[in-house]
Image 1 (tube, rainbow, N blue to C red):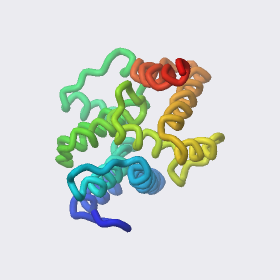
Image 2: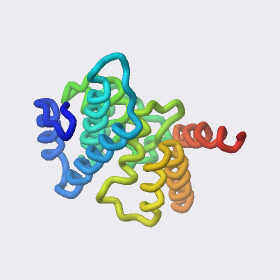
Image 3: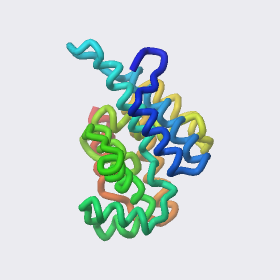
Length: 208
């Protein structure tokens, strides 16, 4: 990746794969999330002794954003087939929450059909809907990018964008609280990973 933009052969291939799987609206969303994830990674990313580490992280964030919803428009029966074929057994709670399946199927599809080998990217795709405890920087970047991408227009998105521009963990608090509140309003069960992520990020703020 070069500063100011990139289009590696891998990303070009991933972009085409996503375009073929998604509706035009969902494809546009995926491109927006990829760009937002890249920008967040540049803001909150890190440098190491490796001269290209910063650019590598930004490319990973872009890739995770691009691929995160690749299974979203696939019929639920096909999502279950991919999940089963990937060796994952859904819990009773997960079976009752079909909206979570695309993230699980997406990780498997990226791994087994697009040959993504980066475990951080795969994990970010897997938990972009539920979150989880112990999230890496890349996982947080994707989770928040999905909330604040340019196409998002829900009530409160401005506040989310302000928090994401100020502090990533503040944005995580806001996003998790928003998700839990919406699930409660709809009388939906809440995945334990979401509860664990919320408790982990909120407890230090309440103890200070």
